[in-house]
Image (cartoon, rainbow, N blue to C red; front, side, top):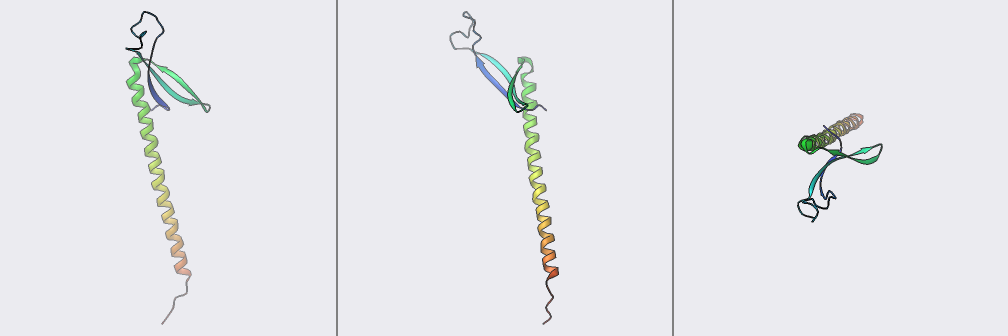
Length: 99
């Protein structure tokens, strides 16, 4: 897993005789954007490793989503248990009426 976001951009390289000089057939640039000490930073990813890095960044996102869902379910379960305890305590403290 890798933190951050995988980014693919298209850009000109700056060489006047390159195929990208006219604005067509631009070069692909791959980046991993992460927060470092609360500041966004981008790191170059070699084209040969782009698919690997993309997959690892997506894996981190899926993990975070699953963890959030588990935390939500656990909090609902915990709060439901607390609510049941309060209801039981309230009903057991009421006097029993004999008619």
